[in-house]
Figure (cartoon, rainbow, N blue to C red):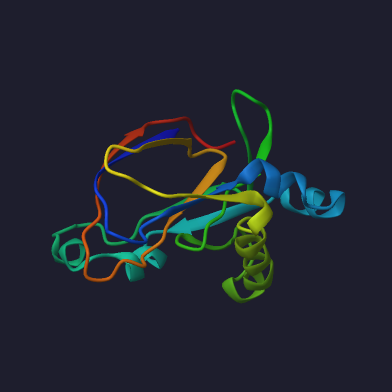
Length: 164
């Protein structure tokens, strides 16, 4: 449902987080694109996230190596009733019933559309800074531009509902 981060140690430069409004991204789509996306479901796979795993993650003994789930491409927020894209470049592999190759052009469009500058803000961390966001309608991207320095955050994630 939601995530909260508190900065404990920040690098002397960089390490910001980009946030993007899924509401703004969805509402900026044409009526025709929304009609196309609304009934679609997407396959999300842990296999796609392998590229972001740390060395420690890869060493963990996990009996089940592949996790997959189907979710709506545009989900409805249970409290606001507003819609937002529910795909991301780190996990979404294809649309249900459509091959990865056929899905790729539309997913590419969605990945880039939802993080357009007019839908985003950049949060610069200081020690003790807290960010709290709704995972059902906000995308986040920690910027990895602080090579050689530490960034220590403590995270709390609240469980939510099944995407609809």
